[in-house]
Amino acid sequence: MKVYFSHGKESGPWGSKIKRLASIAKEYGYSVDSIDYSDILDPDLRVERLINLLNDEEDDFLLVGSSMGGYVSLVAAERLDTIGVFLLAPALFVSGDKKQNYTSKACIEIVHGWSDDVIPPESSIKFAKNMNCSLHLIPGDHRLNSSIDVVEKLFSQFLASHISG
Image 1: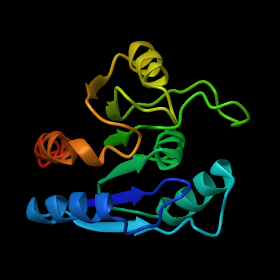
Image 2: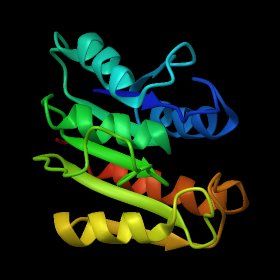
Image 3: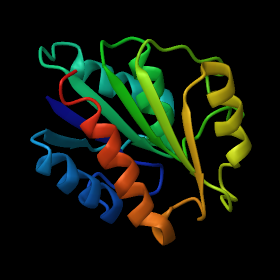
Image 4: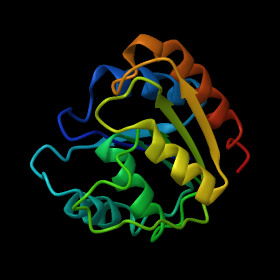
């Protein structure tokens, strides 16, 4: 099984948070990849890049997205056969984004910081309520760096729950 990471608007494919989470995924036996979107600002074009890369994926996979990468992973999951999506402070219900209503068959889990002043936690609360999915509101801002240990534990639990599919 493979884990595909999608980074946020102002970060890169192998930022410190993704490196730490990728290390955990490898410990669980997952292979990992992080898609580089640094040449694309439009979130919907990033969605198309991810879908094009994964359309022919034959193995089971999980999507992980942070901020704009959360939007990208979630929207792509609606059109791909992924078994799980792990979102970190996802940029949902952002004015101007093409997609404002979300559906998914995948198991979705969200982690969002209470002190996020970039993407308010209320957007994740609204999404989680609409989708009836797991939401973890934890101390921290948009980057979640101050609570990275909690994020790692939640991600580890998420991966463990998907090992057998």
